Image (tube, rainbow, N blue to C red; front, side):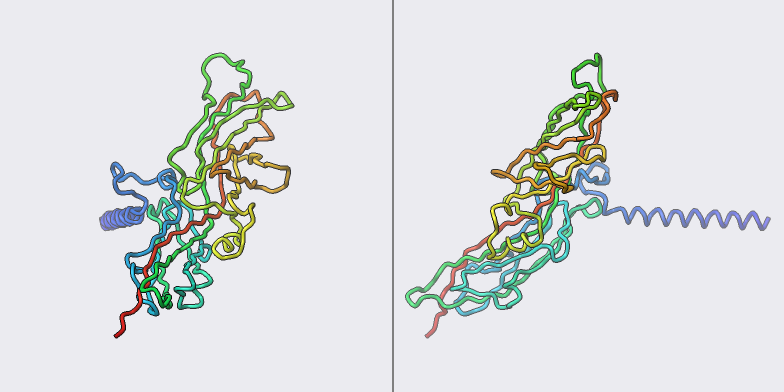
Length: 337
């Protein structure tokens, strides 16, 4: 009798423990749900990687103020937010304040070299990207004796590394010459993407082409991939030293602009996207008028005896990005008697 009572008590304890653990798991998963979705459905990677946003930046109200007295200090406060789906690692982002040095200057010497920052992007666990507020002290200088006021410009330039990660399903049709009669598992067609991938640079179109190889027993899937800069900033080479130069007065070369590294794979097998013969794993492409088309091919090919099938196509784009905001500030002479 005692053993049965002990067993019953033990079962109740186990049920209680399981219930508590379940509640804890549910509470821990709350960050993976997005308000407004039907039934509080959990968000997915597709929900996160949408839109054309990366880093967002703005001056806080009255920082800098609209009007500043000469020979007095004034604040510059920048609100930074990562609205995209890529993390900007610590110290990889750079913020530089620009002033007309004849009329204003930064107070702290360290601020003149640029301020380093890092902000995590959106994820399925945190559907809202990180934000930060950066405060800088500035000081207005004298203006000409003949002027009571002078309008000067304050600017803020951000430079940071970013990535676009794209994934879709494509049809691989080994029946290049249309010999197969009847229904197929899929049909090769062009695909367009107008919602973005949670980054300022986006894959906007994929055109699939199937070619018979020199060895007629294989078919080579090939894809024309359209890439566009859909943001308001400038694409630059993703090398750390180039990103650093973009936010300083050091000159950049022509090849440093609009430069993107691309890697692509079909069913986990690397595609050849090389513009020229080289041994690098990735290829550097260059946007022209904010757009480019690159061809990526599975060189090893696929056995022609295989039935048509649907396969995952993955594309990774790596680049630097920079943009500037600015505001006019009126410098006024202090009233003295």
